[in-house]
Image (cartoon, rainbow, N blue to C red; front, side, top):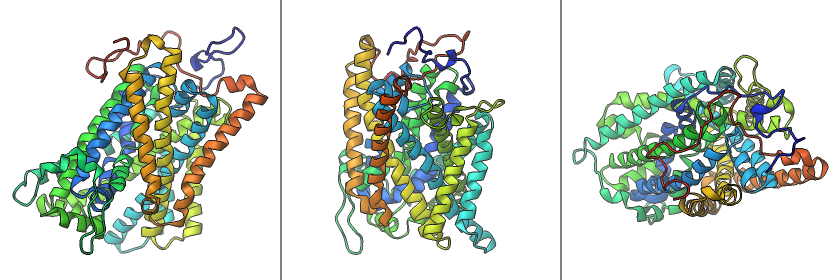
Length: 530
């Protein structure tokens, strides 16, 4: 889209009076800490693996994570190509606006705000559940779960107020501890192969990712769709890297690289950890039975038996720090969506302001904290405060995560189409048969299929709670509202409409210009023009 001589520049760095995020605040490691923590490795494993094993693929559970890894690498090919061209804090919102149009871009911008906004209170539900158990175990007292959940929101609000480098350091410590713990677990189990652990190579057969298992005795049947959906669910968070483009030192290199590293590292870790967890049982029937009947001890029992009680105890603490760090990562991303929409005047302009000292989106961050606290209070009012298992874990954690995950998967599918259109229209010379055509098509079909799996298995995925049946309609309603709002702006204020999702960041005057060329070895499909 070309700019007229009288129109303000689309590069926010060239605009007068524009509140900018802190440039060059974080490098590759910082972006990785900010995004990988959103995937919450230990939380994803301890909560999702028992479901994939016990209600999904059984022996083929590791294959489900392996297949998800491959599909998300394919998605990242086009996503990274887009990130090298469009540097903006808006993420999905900016990419879709550039590739498809402002109407759908604004709709998915609102959808992204909703998705990431509900992920933080979702994680507070899991955090409150596990912390309630730990406090009861240590001190014999029962602290109401809303108190613990709101305390987490307050802690995140304080930390997120300061320099983004501080957030990345806090998240980095939590992430490293989680990853080291899972690696110790994996190594400990595999070192007992044939002597307490039964390791089967057939568990990695990719065809098993599309197979369930029949009902046997008291065990219910497993559905492949459930296994695949929860495997994909484990990655939600990695896609946040483009939202930190304006704050990274070399966004056209760092953001694409962080996407690939995140997907591959998580894929290897998830596949090995799932494989190790089910290998800690004498046979797959015992693993399925434990997963269905006592999922809370699925990891702890194996850790205690094969490595030592200390590891199970460490895991019980790290799931608390992991939940907190994950909630903080989602808070940061939600705040940047509020900020991006605020500075484009699609939300109150105050959200588009940054802190005068720390250059963080402080107003947007405060708004996200208020939203999280309001959701927690509403759940406490309508579900009660005396049953953390159902109210905090089952309803707040499960239902809000489901609501957001459907929107993220839909956004990823639409971004894949946006990538194809953007390169064909705006950068035909950089259009590549694999990177900006075939890979995005495969990614679109895969994401659409996972959404279908979710809807088809909504009764199970939603935990049987009545509110779950409303979730797809709420998500659809937000998208429709966004489209209608964009059409109204197009009619009433064409100049404002023309900027929806189009503001980018090309660097402050005097900064060295980056080319966006790939570092050797991570293009995954060749360079443009091949």
